[in-house]
Length: 85
Image (cartoon, rainbow, N blue to C red; front, side, top):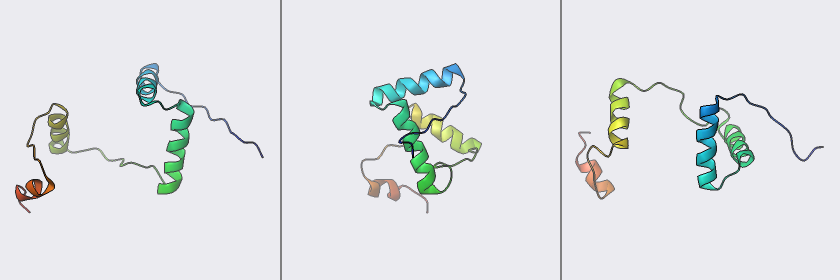
């Protein structure tokens, strides 16, 4: 049995470049990233992340968080204290 197998994927050049830059910054080879992804597919018995489209409120919260906006807390207890649950 072969020690490795080949896969081929077609990506847009922009996506490929952006992903490869991040992987390089992380010190992870493209082959290692593919293997990690495949291992996660096996471990999850499916795609290893949520495949849902966030609603408008969630999208806004994500944008706010990326821009450093929103409520900041120092501890988990502080987080739960401010929630209406």
